[in-house]
Amino acid sequence: MSDRRLALVLTIVYFFLVALVFSIQEVAAIIVVTFINVAILGALSNYLYKYIKSRVVSNTVALVVFFLMLLLALYLIIPAVLKEFGSFYSVIMENVKTHAWRSYIKNEQLLNFVEKLFEYLKPTAEDYVKGEIARITASIPSFALQLFFIILGTIYSLIYIDQLKKFPEMLYPRRVWRISDPFVEDLFANLRRFVQAVFVTALITGMLFFLIFEIMGLKYSVTIGVWAFLTNFIPIVGVIFEYVPVFLFSLSLGLKGVILMAVFTLIIHTIAFVTFLSMMKGYTKINPVVMLFFIMIMWRFQGLLGIFIAVPITIFISVFWKHFLRPFFEGGVTG
Image 1 (cartoon, rainbow, N blue to C red):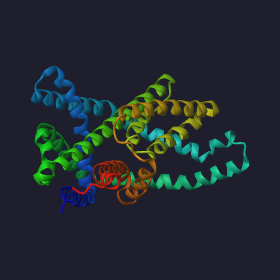
Image 2 (cartoon, rainbow, N blue to C red):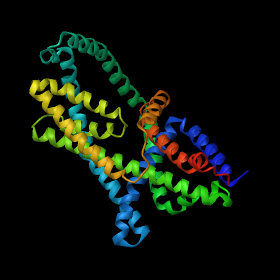
Image 3 (spheres, rainbow, N blue to C red):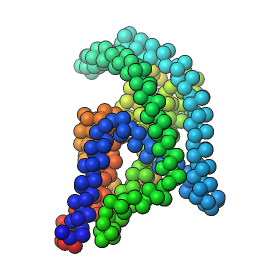
Image 4 (cartoon, helix red, strand yellow):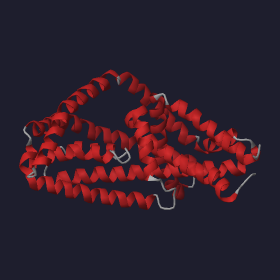
């Protein structure tokens, strides 16, 4: 078997082994969140290394800063969200019950469609929220254990990141390193940059929603900001999840409020989209059709976590095609 064919076969085998591990949702969540943390901390550590000139010190400072910021955010955000959530949910459901959108829609066919949509969504949303609250309450012990492994995994992964970078070489014979090394480096460079770009755009979106609600003197600025931040980690469909509560809340502000929120949402996502494209410049371009296809598949098997995993799978396929399949089809490579 030629070197390239051997590297190709081994890569496919490892992909399916990873897919098997990721079929366990709890394990997949730990790995995904740990990778996100390490990708963000790695960027921070690299920035600090320019001035500190010590990898150990830069990693340590990055970890300390990260966990201090996380604790500060939890201290400031969780109490505010808990305080706002009950009232926010009541306002949204009241708008659904009173059919507040009636006065804004003049087209009878559109009005009938919206009414039927909300008649379907109202009990579905109520049941979903109640079910999620019950599920979260029941899974607190499991979540605490996952959080422990995430924290431990984040710390050890960053400390031993140089050794981890050499791990892929253990998976391939030395004779195929000239083929496997560029593939692995390209894959993880794209995955890291994707995570960093998503984190930055999610942070920008959450902060801008928070600021707009604060400037307009509206309630629930923290809840909306946190919701916008979290949903923007979900590719494509996350924007829909984000905007639904914003739209339902804006119904209580009248037609002017609905229009203003729609305009602000468009401006915010334009800024986020431009930022994302700027950060991904020079990296693998993801085919949106392929991405949507895998989002639908992964949503079916892994829920919201699967939607996020779908993009890394798309990135893997793009990089795999670039390093293994395209040389065969375009250049007739045999070695």
